[in-house]
Amino acid sequence: MDAMDRKILTELQLDGRLTVTELAARVKLSVSPCHRRLRDLERAGAIRGYRAVVDPAAVGLDFEALVFATLRWEDRDTVETFEAAVAAVPHVTQAQRLFGEPDYLLRVATADLATYQQLYDQQLAKLPGVQRLTSTLVMKNVVHDRPLPEQPTPAPTREGGRARRG
Image 1 (cartoon, rainbow, N blue to C red):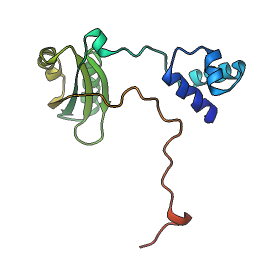
Image 2 (image 1 turned 30 degrees about the vertical axis):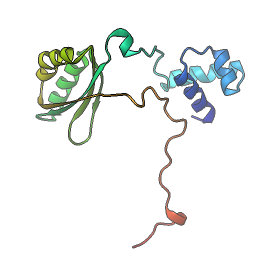
Image 3 (image 1 turned 180 degrees about the horizontal axis):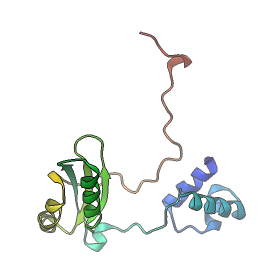
Image 4 (image 1 turned 45 degrees about the horizontal axis):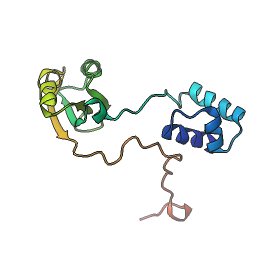
């Protein structure tokens, strides 16, 4: 992946509805090579899909909670069963397995606190393998839907090109 591919990805993250012609103009490339690069990025899996970003408040889901889940055991069966159960809960909009404690971070969207409490009692608290759940309510989203940076963070370099000895 080169700098032009990264520019294409950045532009599409900002506006996934761009036509190939508009995209080519933004990245200063002719249409045919831009289209070829776009197809290559899709085939390589760098672009996993295109979708609309929906405002949660517009659809009545503007109450958000972060739920930290700790499992009783971390054997394969427990993990797979828990992950399948979490994936089946529609109000869980993201689920990430973490290193250390807790084991998982779940992002949950509901209409309000009462709806969240009902979801917690009826579904989240009954997830298989869970030892403990802790919830934190989101006050405000400060950064969201930000495009990935064009360049990966460079690895730290050694001072003066050589390792320091103590």
